[in-house]
Image (cartoon, rainbow, N blue to C red):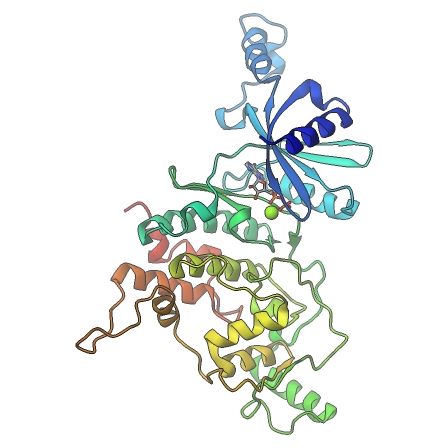
Length: 397
Ligand code: ADP
Ligand code: MG
């Protein structure tokens, strides 16, 4: 490992009281917006294992007080030490650790072993999970490889969502996957929240007719339009209510349309959208698939695919209006199958004027993709439903 990293690790180890006695830092494995993560060896690993054997032999007085830890619950030898930047707010740090503790019993979520604090530095200790960098395998993944990937990811999401938690930052670097074992775990609850935390009623929760009425009233009131939404078509992105605030936390390119439209009643289904973006990345063999620098561009990228009409409808749903005057955007957009064929250079006609057909297993994946990338969060597939979808149930067959 390079000298700078070694220096940094040395400094960290000596500055955090008591850490040196317990862990040996091996390497820096992650550097994000909110933390630096190191791989480390637990120096008490052997001792811990042996101690258990000694103290539990025969008539040891300890015997009655110690219970053999189940195999999966034993302290691992290798850990990931997540050093949370001291600039993170205490509330944010508490939130992450609290949610991780809530989810500790679930195999598909990387469990928190413990968290330690020294002065203003907080670290989280997690079992080290052997995985491969997404960029190393995403181009080679076949449909058969994708099934177990999403089976794992959706199993994690189902567990998280069942507890009413929105992860908010589903993307390849937060889902550690080991292709050799077809197994992955979800990490990074730094942006996660309990659904409803910052809830304010949103237009999308109303019945379609009530929604329509509300919108017409507000449009007339603001002098924007007198005919909506049939003739409304995008001119520039504009929010009818400029004061509206909503949680936008997440990573660009992975944000659901309702996040971009500042829906104030976001649900766990924003994670499903992000998982859909991962699938689109794999099927299109392009990473990152979306390149937008900001939310406006992100909406335009989505408009390229879904068309002006559906994007305007989605805006209306959350009580906002999207207008664009870019003529190159089609009214009705394109099918996801077409997008995937284009992206993978299979859309040209052959010499007889015939187009290539997509193989059946890939069609099934695209159908599933469509269920994840559903603009209306109420129609989007849930994690539970996804686990019953043929694309997932055929994993390992
Ligand atoms: P951040 O909030 O900074 O994004 P993450 O929790 O996502 O922090 O961790 C950053 C990176 O560190 C991950 O993308 C992954 O590469 C690595 N990492 C995190 N936790 C583990 C773990 N338990 N085992 C192995 N690597 C991990
Ligand atoms: Mg992360």
